[in-house]
Length: 329
Image (cartoon, rainbow, N blue to C red):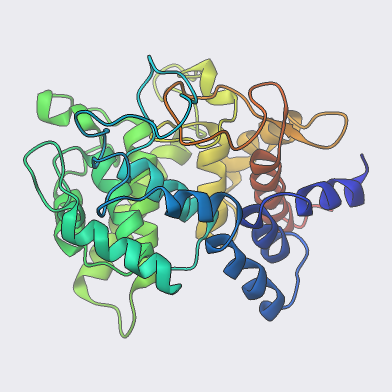
């Protein structure tokens, strides 16, 4: 496919894909983007996910399905992996889809979560978070996106930043080195929180911005995938691109995060950009790779090894931002 054919293929996808293609790749008018985005809550993946909520939760639980929960239909995904059907992973996916937080049905769904969903750890209300920073990073991203008060979770995350600039869920067990997985979850949450703030910058906003910059430096110093000590790639699986990423890190997720931050690309992103570019297939698409095993509500695409609209969208928009920022044709 040439570039025009790739765009046509992307625009033939779900509303969650189409509105982001119009916004990030085609430069469509704001009103056209808004109309397409409104469709996420009314049809396709977004509608299907909203319809699966019951009693203020998905699958009867916050991070994991509730006791006795069973899929409403045939089992989809790997029942031996971590399930991705509870409230946290479902809201992460709705945020990735870009469902409009102002939609009345979306607001009702979020109200239900706030009123009824509790964490498995100690029964904490959903938007008050729990103890693991990777989970709390996702909670901040979700809460900020959907207009909920997550100030207490933000304060906790600021106090848990490690000396090297990142975060690690194993810190409570004595780890002093950060985790790429946890750090990207927290960074996405802090960025979403910053975007949700209005008015003059507060002391908290300045603290969050500084913490986020330190976390970004943790990734940049490692070229988004390498050990600081040896320069070796930490995990070869990070060189493959999965969607949804769940709590897992990979190079495309890190690269697309910096695209979301915006501004002039740091020169240390060059290796990641080259790697993302190199994963493009001869037909102009990027593949689905390294799907994280577990139960899902339904399949979004066609499985590992098949062309992925999600990964193609994310790769194209990140490369466009990177190359334009450096003046690359």
